[in-house]
Image 1 (cartoon, one colour):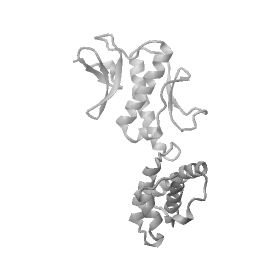
Image 2: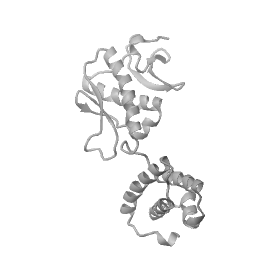
Image 3: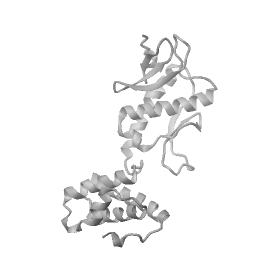
Image 4: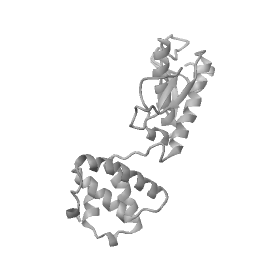
Length: 218
C-alpha cells in the first residue's frame, strides 16, 4: 500500500495531516473511525518521512483485515506520531477548563488588591490556536496550548503562570508577594494541588492558588 503514497509535497502533507488528525480525533471520540481515514493519515505521514511502527502496520496490512479495535489503536498511535493536539474548536471543554482556572486566579488578584480584569483570548495573530491571559486589555508572556485544559490542576498551573507574567508586566512589579519574606511567589504543582510557593526560608508554600486571602504560613 506504500506505493500509493508520495502524492503530496511536504508542505501540503503537513497541512493535510493536521486536518485529517482533527477528523480522526473526532471519529475516535464518537466511536465512528473509518479505515480510509487511518490509511490516508498513514500515507501523509509516510510522505513526511515518518516510518513509525503504526505507519508501517497500516501500509502493510490489508484494510479489510483491520478490526474496529485495530483502527482505534492505530488511529491513536498515528495521532501521537504526528504530534496532533486538539484545538479549542474540536474540544470546547478544554477552553472551559481554562476559564474555570482563570476564575480561581482572579480571586487571588482581587485578594491582593490589584485592580483590573483577567480574561482568556485567542489573538487574531496567533495561528497556533493558543489561549492568552489578557489583563487590562493587554496579553503578554506565554500562550497556553489547548491540551493544558485536559487536566484541572495542569490548567490551573498554566493559567496562573500566564496570568502572573502579564500582571507583572502591567504593574511593573512582582506579583504575588509573600507577606512574610517580601519575595515573589511561583505557582507550582505539589501533591496534585497547585500552590503559590515562596523561595524564602528554605522554600515554603504560602497558599493554594485561588486562596491567597487565607494564607497558610509554614
